[in-house]
Length: 286
Image (tube, rainbow, N blue to C red):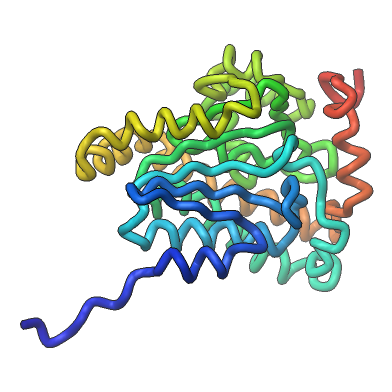
């Protein structure tokens, strides 16, 4: 008998409770885990708190050997179109500290954990219009609701688009299309997202979960080792992309914030910036 025991792994019953204010977690007996991000039960409203919670949750999920596949999505009929009215008070209180501790560090963990800390297949569901779509775009398989609209708001709010969304768009759209999307805030509807290769399928929003579980059932039909090793093969391009580009891009974005010394995450600022998406327009200036 060994002189030491294994350190206990995370228990689903415990971390389901820990993250309940940020994610509704459900797990089937076969280990297929559904994580629905929410703010007060509805669509995600961006904040420092839920920004950090994402990376924390992904690391815990990856450390639990009972998890075999992750389905990651938002809640309601939008993915993320608003900011928590008081969700960035820490940014205005101490910009340099926020830029490193809550933006640079937490943001890099969010993206890298999705790619590196999960040994299991991932299915991302983009349940409606929203920004910060990289979290579902960088899943192994991505489905979009018919009403989904992909866009990046960073440039329009005075920020450098380099916190992971640049990785996703450059990898999936290619150099020219990504440059256009990042500089113009192009609203890419679900049909065009499928044409461009951003997503694998477009389905009615009410059918998203049903279709995700169908795909999960197929993936789960093969042995555990086959599933996990295949995941590492299909994820290799993402690993290279974030190794090459994530840290440097994030550093450039945070330099821009600190040099500007002005908060850009205010609720009213973001709401006015994304109005064109709700109005069905392609961008903010045409």
